[in-house]
Amino acid sequence: MTSPRCVRPVANLAIASALTMFLGACAGGFNLSPSTPAAPPEMAVEPERPATIRPDEIVGKWGLASYQNPNDRARTEKMALAQCKQPYTIGPGTAGGVVMHLADQATPQELRLKGSASGKNYIGPEGPPGGEQDREVISFDGRVLVTRFVDKDAGTRYGNMVYVRCGPRA
Image (tube, rainbow, N blue to C red):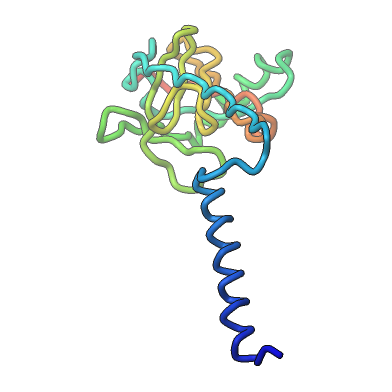
């Protein structure tokens, strides 16, 4: 008959052996499944390109409103202009960007203007153009800037953001 003192070291040895096999499998020591699916190819990160809009072109005071339905754009521009009594300020950044709010952020931060291979412009934090925190510039004519957040949820909640310049350009 085996004494209880002898069983414990044998049990510990069995647990240690099983743990070693498990960790070896995790580290690639052996393959537990006969066919491991190949990892999906990584998406190529688009290189950053200069935006066709310069930061100094959008620095200033803006009336701000938004719309969901494209048919409401003209009316929304008038509503944004009426907001110039309490303008939204886009400030110059210290590193060459602009100071604006990200979606759902109370504190503005410096954002970059980024171009893309498709010719679209984006405003967002450092990173490739079209990132989840970016907003796409839908249109800009020097007086009216229309943007939409890339993130689907933020884009749905905020809609197309219309900025109408308050007074002459800065």
